[in-house]
Length: 468
Image (cartoon, rainbow, N blue to C red; front, top):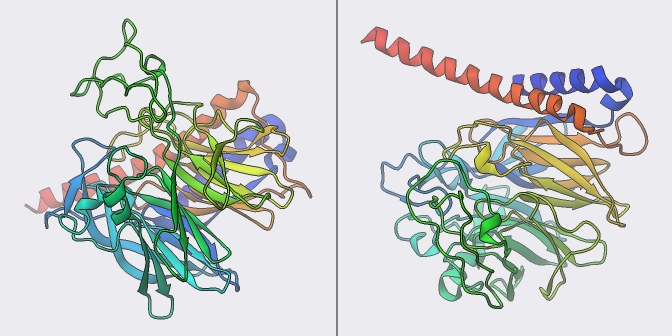
């Protein structure tokens, strides 16, 4: 709770000192749950209780249940029973509904976990839990010994158990590889409409359609690749092992290539895959769905796109009405007026701000951007306590998201009230002259929290040495 008070105090002081109290009250952020391990997506029951998935912090690797991470070279993903489904009551009480769910995460840091990824009720009130994977599904049942990953499950909230396997997306990816690229599965988010689940998979780069009663995969469609000329991509300044591969040959599912320009880095950690990486889905006012993409390493800024998808999984990139030009999207939501809200996980490429393994070295601020039906955009919230967020839901004049969603121990569920200070939502002013000040405020809160934890760990180590 200390993190919340620091962040909000800095935000209020910074904005109020420049704009006065009216601007400072444009919106308010409150923390509903704190101290979580990789919190992700959520839903409400009819009584207003929130059910939130936490992907956990993986395992310690001592049992050998580890696989290479597809997105963090040299750092293994190791399995453990640290994922959970938690319940948050309207009065703020928190309890674990389903403990000890399988989780895999970067070891020993617990960052970027995959496990419990989303939770939704269908139109009859039946609960469903989506389990992520973030790796080669062929290694799920063997090396990881984690058969619950990469699947959609019906669950029993009374007994806290998985009672029916509804769909196995990991096996389908392993057998058929729908997008024709690397074999990686990671069901990330879902929505349920008319007793049918629509699941976006950031590893397989597809959307799955599953009838909840019959189960299985009724349909699947791959998202188009994100073609960017290699010479326009920006890479980390360090020079890791491995040569930058040539871009794939041009074609229906390929991207254009170009030789590196003079002075450009000639080596990098990861292959360039030109994939879409869908991470957010919500039902749109026209009865279809709006899907947001994260984009591929090195996470080019201003390139992430929105898609329109119908119930038959026909996919169309939303070129008009503000449908592109975003960075690392991880959530979408509509309000009752048809305004779309999109969540940027970070405002700049993640490698600039956080090292593989979870050490924060820069500004990991997230932002929420409102896109009106005519395409007009305004930033509703930028940083100021919102960091590395994922998942977005609109409900009764407020936005909800999982904060610090890729980190262990410091994750949160937060609520951003859009109506504070008036009857209508207002955007936080963002003149260029004050952006730096707001960034410093958000960064100061994060660094202060991290420094405190480091001091505590150092004291523990010194105590042990003194005893010896």
